[in-house]
Image 1 (cartoon, helix red, strand yellow):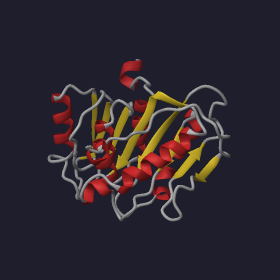
Image 2 (cartoon, helix red, strand yellow):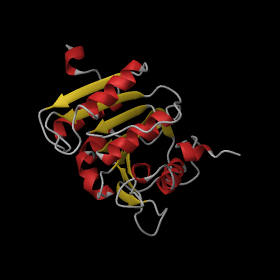
Image 3 (spheres, one colour):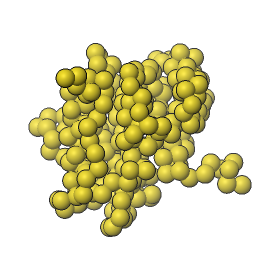
Image 4 (cartoon, rainbow, N blue to C red):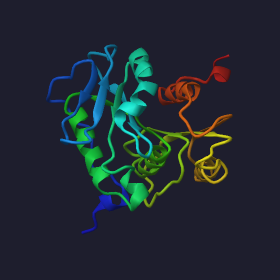
Length: 233
C-alpha cells in the first residue's frame, strides 16, 4: 500500500491532552537524543481553551536556537506556542531528496506538543526561513487540511505532489537577495499560488537574504488574523 508520507503527508491529528503543560520558556521535547525539537512556552499562554501554535523551520546549517529569538517576544506578547524542530541533516530532507526523517521527527514533535496542549486548529501555522521557508511552503501546502497558515521568509522552491485544504499564505522576499533571486523564488511562488486560488499575502522588502524583524511582525499579525494597518484605518 502506498505510504502518503512519501508525498509529504502528515498523519498527526488533534487530540485531547493527557499530560501536564510544560514550564514557561524553552523546553526540549525529548523526541531525540541529538538535534531535538524545542518548544517555547510563553508565560502569557492561556490556561484554558485551545491555543495557537506556530512551527518555525530554520535555514540551512541552522538550529532552533538561531531562529527562536526572532519570534519569542511575539509569542510572549500574543500568547502562542512556538515550536522549532531541528533538521536531521545540515538542511531539510525535502531539499536533499524528498520527505523522510524530518517529516517523521515533525510528527513526533507535533504529537508531543498535542499531548500537553489543546491546539487551535484554526491557528496552527508553519513558518520558515530560506531552506526552512521552502520546507514550510512545501509541507504546509501538502497538509493544508491541518495547517491553517503558511509563512515563508525568503524561501526558495515549492515541492508539492498533493494539495489538501486551503491554508492562507504569507511570502516575504528581499529585492536584493543574493542567494535566492526574488524573480525565481518569491515572485514565482506567489504567482503560482495565486493562480491556483490560494489566499496569498506577498511582501517585497529592500534587503538581502536575512530575517527582517519588521517583516516578522507583519507575519505574526498575519498568523493571528490581525488586520493590516491599511485595513484598520
